[in-house]
Length: 299
Image (cartoon, rainbow, N blue to C red; front, side, top):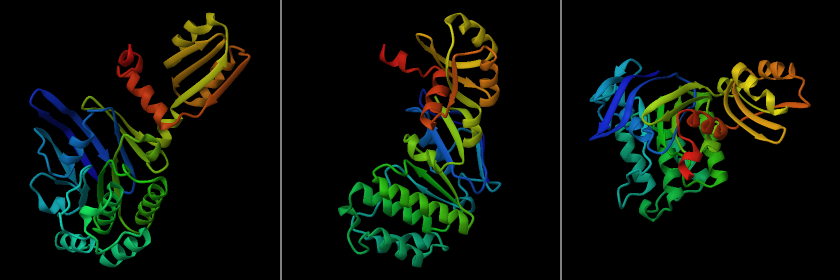
């Protein structure tokens, strides 16, 4: 388990991470989402022991991360701009990491490299961005650590490769103790793999919740009701967003879908239906509540 307790980090006058407390349980795929500059990368770097928190503590299996080789041996960190030795090949790169991660599975690495069709003896500097990303992910998986920290993991991968990497993640989780932590802007790519979501905004955590619970507790409603009901609805329900086009009312409401629809049906609408929300719609709704509204950005 990974625990962050009241973690802060500033760069000059910029508060990159602001008093974040977060728990990441074993055996889940944790997605770190956030607005631009929300602090996702900074948070991952502190979790990896690259940056030192100004206050607070980060624990991996009960051990503080900063300046602690024992704690750092429990995870592999893939940055958004991973470093590669200029003249190294994947084979040489894997040998290098095996000296730092004794549990590195060389046999599995060779097998995955062959399946993904990466050239084992070609210079990494000649690889495309996507090929480099594939290599870093395979190195991270084969390192054999219980935790894998990924910053923009799927950036640069084609759709087929993204699904392949997700499948490999799932296989690892089925076969051993493995917990991926993925920071990304690409919400659609995380929706079908993440179990738990941490939503960051302006250095803080807006929410941390299981994805299935998050979707169950946020509902998009479309109904046909006269405009005179708008105030009554806003007083009775926790409405995050409301838009009206004639008699068609579209709302994003916090609460259980069945209860919300049952209450609206008591108003005898001509039509009322709950529509599933995508992770992207949930992200937009939650950040709008926090003041990150598209209208304020374009007006």
